[in-house]
Image (tube, rainbow, N blue to C red; front, side):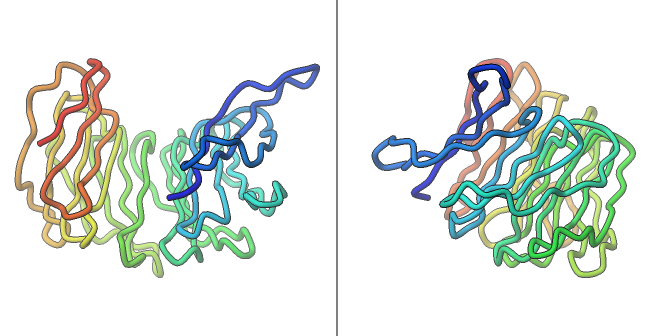
Length: 231
């Protein structure tokens, strides 16, 4: 992408946290906008026109990157913070995951809550499948779950980790799911069957970030032990 974002503490009497958007090529700050009261998660729409920010006040807020205008305030979560946010590939839907153990699907145009997706623990990460048909969620209940975006029904569950899940990712073709956990492992799953295909062992602390290479041949894991590993 050509735009990146970061969060920082504000200045002056209000001391709001600020989301700053930068040109990824030049490093020049393009725009900043204050968030009340604090920031936990950020995502861009695929076209880079919008930013979704998860806050420590139980809300997520949709912003126009070019103008800095707040377009929607998504309310409904009951416990802070909103740990994870995501846009569907076509930008029509938004997803949030929060402390009270639910993920939620929203209409990006209206801000209306469409579906409430229940876990048995804190929801730490959310991601849409590449075609936008499914949402995968990762939770402290030691599972990742796949939901049908249109119906909100759970269609698959990935179980096998020995501690809470912190991160989740889809491969670019949507056939694989990668999870990172507090059990110090990352695991690879068949997205269609839910079968565990491989366990990546070697980290010595919780695995807080996971990603596929664009061609799906490699995986990347980031860990609280201070290492990033390519598999």
